[in-house]
Length: 131
Image 1 (cartoon, one colour):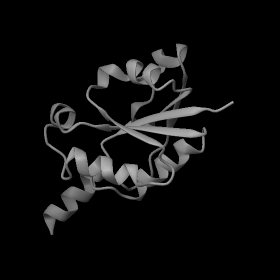
Image 2 (image 1 turned 45 degrees about the vertical axis):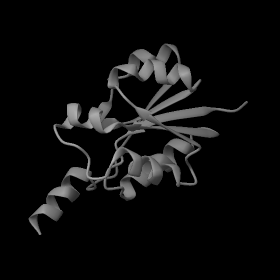
Image 3 (image 1 turned 60 degrees about the vertical axis):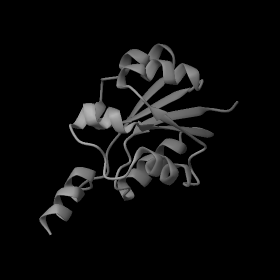
C-alpha cells in the first residue's frame, strides 16, 4: 500500500537543510507532497516577503527528484484541509513546530524531524546582508 507524505515550508534561499528535510520526509513514504508557503503567508508569518518569489520557490522544489507534487500553502490554519485534500498518511514538520500539529493525529501520523544544525535561511540572509 502506497504512503503519501506531506510537508510544508517556505524554502527560501534553498540550502542543504531544506534538501535534507525533504529527503528524510520522502523516506517515510512513497509519494511526497510539498506545500510551499505563499508570499502573502510569509509576509503575515515573518513580517517580510521571501527573497525568491513564490513561483521561483515552487519551481526549485518541484525540480527535486524526491518531490512528487507541489502546491501553494495559503494559510497555516488549513493544514488539516491540505492533509485531507492530498490524502496524506504522514505529516512531516520540523521539530521547531513540535506539538503544534498533534491534533492532526486523528487523520494522519504526525512526525517532527530535527532541523539540520547550524543552517538557517534567516542566518544566511543576515550573513549576506553583513557582507
